[in-house]
Image 1 (cartoon, one colour):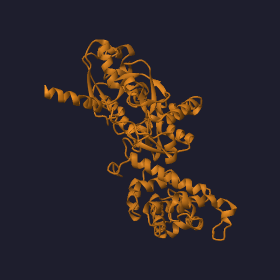
Image 2 (spheres, one colour):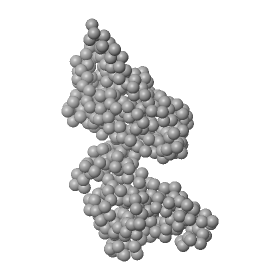
Image 3 (cartoon, rainbow, N blue to C red):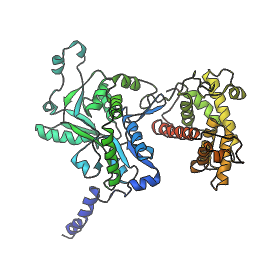
Length: 475
């Protein structure tokens, strides 16, 4: 009786821990996010949500998140949800402010998170292979060889991701049809795209996917059938913490505004309706999820970046900014090639044929090495990179002027953001470019500031989506 009594005392604790009662959402709302200056969004790494294709960051959620951040006047930081199992904990414990993912709205999920205004609607469908000789069959003949009714799932084995709404739906469906469906819950870090691929390859028989995702994948895997629904239409939404009512209201208002704009539907069609582009992305070696390459010049970048001791993905981001990896690009000012070098600069740093990718990259990194030495008095290496990038874009003279102005007005000449960048921006105003300490006159400072920001932001995406261990020029 004593043992039973002691266990009864502990039961509420076990119950509360099991139900996540002790994991109260952190209290970070829009006011605190504005002070921080950036919105941290959790999203998936997939052929629809967030990926890189030929060096460009793309994705349905990614594009919408950029528009949302602009509307809120915030910077955007992306956190990849590697597993659906802990995605709500990531949100509630403050590792992100919003989940921008293909989340089905369900009652059990509502207990843990606050759903936004719905983004779109979809159904859950069965993903299965067509019969081997389906091309020689008529539609009704194909239907005799596949599952066309949920009742026929009795006794079948279906693989779905742990923590997904598909698990809940299959359990309910099993009750509805009065028979057992064998549900195999694969680890939460397995994507729906990967499970669809496994069905296409014959590694598993069935999986479940949202209809919009299933249909766009079917455009690449032609042997799949995705016509059998296993649910009624359901709402797809994003999510915030229940302790973030200000953010929820702001996102809801933004979604309602966006639904009235053509851009909202153009973005959706781009990722879920445009089958030609999807096939092109997913079949390319420059698609980050499967190919692992950024550009045809990865090996050259990896070799040359050793001169400057940079992560080669940072150099790749600079090259994309300059030329989008187009080796024959020429600017109106006369800059040429992958790293957009002026002929005089190129000759000084070892290039004769600027249209040759190897010579162009070698000369460009030689110039970056020179800039690295030029700015060696900047003590912090991460800050030094920003000065190097700005100088690559606008020259060292304008940046030095901005440093002098920063020092004159009591700001730190060795810090870029809100210090040197602040006065580089003001070099377009007569009061500042006519100052006696300024040697290089007028400068349209917005351009180098945007240049530095965009390269570093893209580099963060490259780091998110192309891990060092995965990236190889020979892959």
